[in-house]
Each structure stands twice: as structure tokens, then as C-alpha cells.
Amino acid sequence: MGPDAHPLAGLPLLSGASDDELAGIAALMRPGRAPAGVVLGREGEVGRTFWLLLEGRVAVTLRSRHLADAGPGSILGELALLRHRPRSATVISIALPARASE
Image (cartoon, rainbow, N blue to C red; front, top):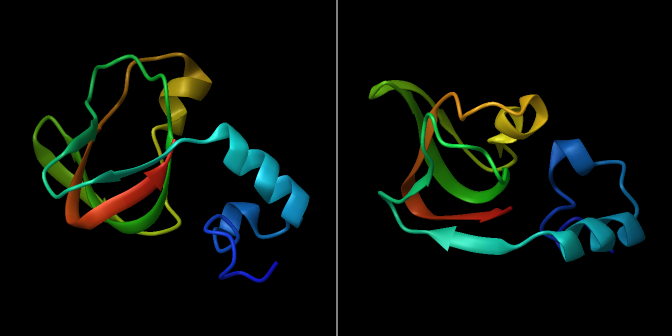
């Protein structure tokens, strides 16, 4: 399977994964789209998911202050899961429908 054949294949995190590994990871994920303005995760919420951003752009804010923008290949929300703590920032879709898997 070439890099264009599977949406996860182009992510740096998964660059060494085999086709079978990519298929296994994809089977555990739930794809979604978020039009501009949709909040994917809110600061202070309990983290139950994380996102691998496949398309579009999102803004990351803290206390309503813009921290950064993120694009395809970004991993968002993982710290809340790994540390078992509330989300440390808010993530909002800002361009294109952001396409991500959680």
C-alpha cells in the first residue's frame, strides 16, 4: 500500500508502520470532520480521546489566548489521556473541514 492509499500512512508518527499495522490502528479509530468553529476539545475537560489531524487546520488556545495553529500530521489531546488530567488547552477547527481520527 503506498502512502496515498491509507490516510494514516503519511503521518510521521506512523511512518514505519506496515500495511497490517496501519489497518489495525485504523480499525480502532473513529474518523470525523469538523467545520470551522467546532471545538474538538475544551480546556479543563476530562480527556477521553485524542486526535490525529489528517486535513485542515485547528487553533490551540489557553484561557482564550491563541497559542498555536496545527495542521495535518498533528497529534492533539494525547497529554490528557497519558497523564490522566483535564485538557490543558482548547482545540478549535479553523480552516477547511478538519478531518481527524480519534
